[in-house]
Length: 319
Image (cartoon, rainbow, N blue to C red; front, side):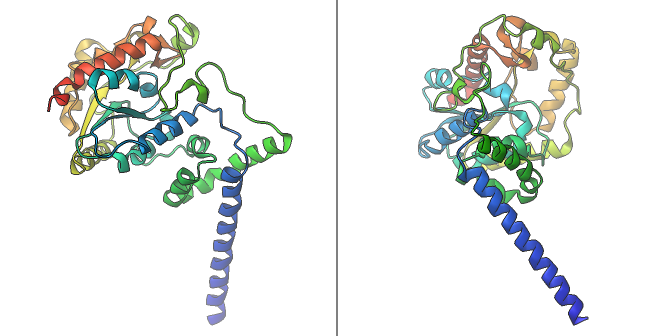
């Protein structure tokens, strides 16, 4: 029996050593070798995060957190000018998982802050590790934070990502800048999207993108509980957490006004945070304000959405 237990202990020790070796080698490749993804647009998230890190914790700010719908809709410079408060955004793509972005923001939420989330769903417990890895490549603090909090998610994806990077490094290649706004250079040093997106572009991909139908009960109780817990967290920190609607291509919303009224009534009843729009459809935009997909605004749409957000925030700015 003792021999059997020794065998189990040895097996466990070998497994632990193999894990340590795997993470050590993977970590060296991911943060030690020259960056392969430095031009990837996921790096816009890093710019946003670094700007937020430098924010003054004693000075109340506006922080808008979300996904690509938010990144394409909110002009933090325009919002700052309108409100007279420092404004920041945090969020790059829904496939990363909202929970990752929400958690990144937590240490920087302080007394007097206004935190706004354009709600496009939550999906509690989901982490899009591939996209997260693209963001945290060659960013040791962000990489190790994710490693220690979510080792099993990283274990499942790190090997494949490292193989891609190693092959590219051996060939002396780096990822191209991407097309149009799908590159790090589309964002300024604060992570604010400044790439000009004109009206009338990407008409075919816009028309081929998803349709949306909003209905009572469409979000799970687990997701609702997570968002309500975040509302409580912000309150504990002395901040205000608010919800708003995200930008959506009007022609791809398959609801009647009556449908939307029923959805909105349900939404207001299940979430603890205020929904600050007068109507859910206030941010459903016509085609000339959209770009590429049914949830991305062009530059004019970004100005319009940011102006709407400013007006919806006015009652909270006066407090």
